[in-house]
Length: 225
Image (cartoon, rainbow, N blue to C red; front, side, top):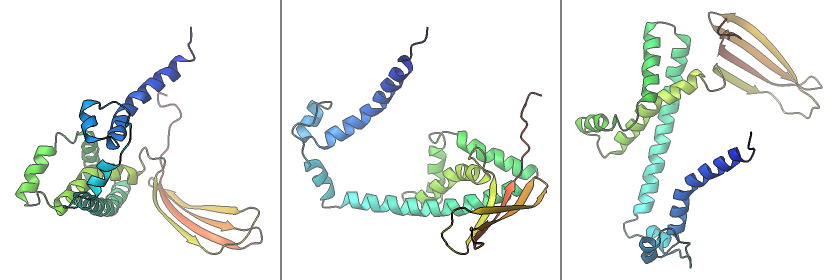
């Protein structure tokens, strides 16, 4: 006997459990300080913004300094990760040897190791290199920890695509009822494919071109066959 209401009810209960910590944070932020410890789960009646004002107007500007540090670390980490992951992923996707397979396996292992396990070794390394409690050390940690994730995305594995490079060139913009996509595959060899696309408007105007290189994999419809 199927109960159509059971699955939505379970999903609702699980969602409610995830919402509990968020409720505590939002409710206590706009609650008076003496009421937070006495009634942490109570509604903020009457609500107050004194806690937020106190944080934003601290004499040491701790909040704004923390926001600035977080912004700097995030921007630098993302920039370095984007360049490093794309370059290494491009090389690993094109090369086929024992070294690249071993390196790919090592990067995948980095995704499976919990960060708590490597916290003490990373701290020792940062202390040895005198980068502990520095901006450079924090950026280096972020880059090293998230490189395996960036490599997996650059390789296109489980990311919805296997593109190696893609170049788009916009020639002109005109009104048209439809667009003709002229797709030409130049070569498919050694596991790679290369092609070119021309986009034409109704009146024959060239709208743009695109070129792309991809990894070609032959998926078997029946893996057990």
